[in-house]
Amino acid sequence: MHELQITERILDIVLKHAAGQKVDRIVRIHLRIGALSDLEDEWIQRYFDYLSRGTVAENAKLAIVRANAVMRCPSCSSSFEVGREELASAQCPDCGERELELAAGREYLIENMEVL
Amino acid sequence: MSDAVRLIEIKEEIHADNDRTAKALRAKLEEKKTFLLNLMSSPGSGKTSTILKTIETLRDRFRFAVLEADIDSTVDAEAVAAVGIPAVQLRTGGFCHLDAAMVTKGLEALDLDALDIVVVENVGNLVCPAEFDTGAVRNAMILSVPEGDDKPLKYPLMFTVSDVLLVNKIDYLPFSNFDLEAMRKRAMKLNPQMEIFEVSARTGQGFEQWASWLAREVSDFLNSAPGASRPAIGKFLSISRC
Ligand SMILES: Nc1nc2c(ncn2[C@@H]2O[C@H](COP(=O)(O)OP(=O)(O)OP(=O)(O)O)[C@@H](O)[C@H]2O)c(=O)[nH]1
Ligand SMILES: [Mg+2]
Ligand SMILES: [Zn+2]
Image (cartoon, rainbow over all chains, first blue to last red; front, side, top):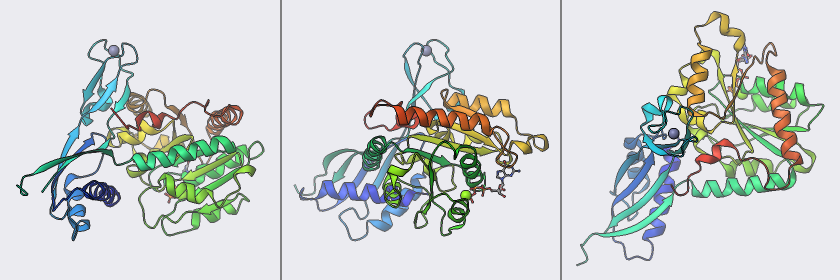
C-alpha cells in the first residue's frame, strides 16, 4: 500500500509551509481524506512518526477527518453525501434516480496545522 | 507568548503534483497523437494475456508499444517483446502503483512519433493504482471471474476511475457462482458510463467487441483536434476544489 508515499507528501508539504514561519514545532495537522481512500489512519500516523524524526514535525498528531463521498444526480442536479458503504446502493433523495455521478470522495487535503 | 498555538492555513491537495504531471503528459500525448491506455487489475487476472490478445487483434491497424510495471521481474516485458512489440520495463522499486512521473519517464524510452497506442500494464493491485492518474487517455480495468462478483463493493474506487471493464476468464463462468448480472449492477451503480465487455484472453471470446471499442476510441483520439478529445472518466474525480 502507498501509505508511505502519501505520508512523505504530507511531510514535504507541511515542512514547506513551516519554513520561514518561525515554527518551533508542529503540534497537529488537520487532514481531510475522502471516503474512497483505503488507507488506514493508524498506518499514516505510524509512517509519519517514522519519517518526521528530527524535523519540526516530530511528534505531530495527524487529525484526520473522513469526508463522505459526494454524489451528483444528472437528472435533477442535486448533490448529496453518501458513506462508503452506501456508494453502490445510493439513490437520489430528490428524484429517486439511481444512475449517479461521483463528484467527490478521493481527496487528500491538508487543511491547516497547529504550530508553536 | 511564544507558546501560544498558531494556526497555519495550508489547503493543499496531496495529489496536486501528480495531477499536474498527468495533465502535462496528456497534453504531450495529444500533440504526439499517441493513445495511452492504463490497464489495471489484481495480480494474475490476465493483464499480460489481454494485452497480447489485443495486440494480435489490432496490430494490423495500429502501431503498439507496452510499458510493463512488474515488480522485480521482466517476465511480462519479455512476453511482449517476443511477439515483436516494443516493450519497456519500468523500475517501480517495489511500488504498489504507477504514477504520472514514472509513466512519463518510461515513455522517454519510446519513439512516440512512430506509435499509435501505448498500453501500460500497471502494478497488479486493485487499490493503489486507482488513486494515481497516470496521464492515460483511458483507464481500463480487468476483473476476472475467479475473483468474484463482489469486487465492486470492496474496491469502489477502481470501478469509478475506469472507462472500461473487461470481465476476463469468462470461460470459467460455467464452473463458478459468479453472478454476472449482479456484478454488472454493482459496477454500473458506481460508474454508469463505464463500458463492460465479457472476454476470455484464452479463447478469444469477446475480443472482437472489446477491440472494436478500443479501435474507435483510438481513431477518435488520433483524428481529434488537440484538446477536443472526451475526458477520461477518472478525471471527473481529480478533485482540486470541491
Ligand atoms: N482460463 C483462462 N485463463 C486465463 C485467461 N486470461 C489469462 N489466463 C491465465 O491466467 C494466468 C495469469 O495471466 P496473466 O496474463 O499473466 O495475468 P496478469 O494480470 O498479467 O498477471 P500479473 O502480471 O502477474 O499481475 C495465466 O496462467 C493465464 O494463462 C482467460 O481468459 N481464461
Ligand atoms: Mg502481467
Ligand atoms: Zn435527482
